[in-house]
Amino acid sequence: MIDSISTEDAIAIQVKDLDFRWYKGSTVLESCSLDVPKGEFWMLLGTNGSGKSTLLKLLAGLLQPQSGFIKPLPMLGFVFQNPDHQLVMPTVGADVAFGLAGSGLTTVQIRQRVDEALDAVNLLPLIRRPIYALSGGQKQRVAIAGALARHCEVLLLDEPTALLDPDSQLELVAQVQRLVKERNLTALWVTHRLDELDYCDGAFLLEKGKVVDQGDPQRLRQRLMQIPM
Amino acid sequence: MDLLRSLPLGLYLEQPVTWMHRLDPRVKLGWLLTFLAAPLLANPPWRIALVVLLILLTLSARIPLRVWRQQMGWLLFLCFLVFALTTVLPDGLNASHQPRLPANELAFAEQPNQLPPPPPAKNPWNPFEWFQEKPATSLDAGKTPEVFPQPTDYTYILVQQGPITITRRSLDLGIRVSTLLFTLIYSTNLFLLTTAPEEVTGAIENWLSPLRRFNVPVTEIALTLTLSLRFIPLVLEEVQNLVRSVSTRAINWKKLGMRRTIQVWLMVAERLLENLLLRAEQIASAMKVRGFTSPNQHQVQWHQFRFRMRDWLALAGIILLWGARMVWGGEG
Image 1: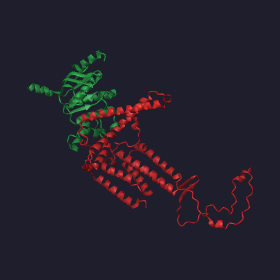
Image 2: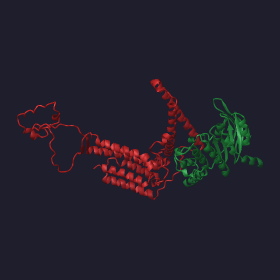
Image 3: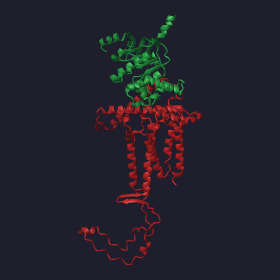
């Protein structure tokens, strides 16, 4: 009994036998199951159309599955592929404060949270900058700061580096890895860039809506290098 | 993005933080409205004083020169051009009227009863005679009377140099138009330069808050305004992308004809609308994930509005300015 509770607690993201279809009929996920342990940084790999993004949207509650179980995630941060679609306020500080509006904090507390979150992603000097004047990597970091300010324990990242240049891509993944370790977060990162696998604790390989392999990232990398994607 | 970055107006300057940045946005909004309203029905010296005040305010805030040149250089140029043109061009009051009686009646009445001898016939082949003055005759009754000594130094025409005529009215009009243009654009620009967009909407929300009593969704209006300020750049970017996509297709417009050109542009417009709606959907889901509550409760608390000493001083400044406007600024 005690043992099962402790394993339940040790898993942050849990999905069991998830099925999802679009109304048109094409099946996206079919009895898909995965567990991400708490405090770890896992990646989700797969070809285009294998259902990676859909899985993340289901986890975030943006879509409803036809059947299956998703462990409820009370506070989660979501980082989308295109940073321009998630930053909604005109300047950096206000955008990080956007998610705190319903939290019932005082203005001073909000200010502290925003400062702390922006400090964690090394963007504190840009707190007053308009969003349009930021680079792509900076925008993604602002999006992460928005999640950190809400004290999210789970981060879902949907190909956050897809629109970044190679340097800021590796910088971002290293920063997320550091944040996961420092703050004991759990992160699930969707990618199709193999060199990002060096930074994670484990990875899932998704194929046709099913997890076909999981575990050591280097082994998965070898496997993917052999199969032409 | 380059389209937006090259837009010269209304960009927020986040560095350096001047004393104008630190001012409470509600007071700044009050100052802006003052600058918009004070030139109405005011006399020209007052209008010029407002312009000078605006420039002094900018100088005292030590706004960097590059911003000046980029955002305000062209405005100053435009205003000077408008001033020069309006001053030099005809003032519209020169309706030519003819008096019922001859202008110099006495000369007319006293002229001799007989016609003077006809002037000697001109020799058309002699060019020296062409420009010779006509000999003055007493028949020139219709000519303008000579200028009489005036009790004051008032003249309607201020400058008359060759083709350039500056009258009192054109000078007045030039001052009015150019200063009005300058005050309106410049004060708004200065306000946007030193106030972050969400501060602007926060101030508007704060000013509108009495309307909550009448069930006006003030927070929702302010939030909508804030979001639209953020997404204007995105719309511009989308337009820019589409324009580029059309221009890289190497369409031969000359051969296309009117009908098919319209078809192409309709297609582009449809695509634009589609893209914008798609973006709106994505943004909506992002807002949902990021903890959006409901439109009329989602008040992003970021800037605290608190009146400090300098805000009270600025408020007193508004009152003083309006006092001065009442005393000296009137049309009189």
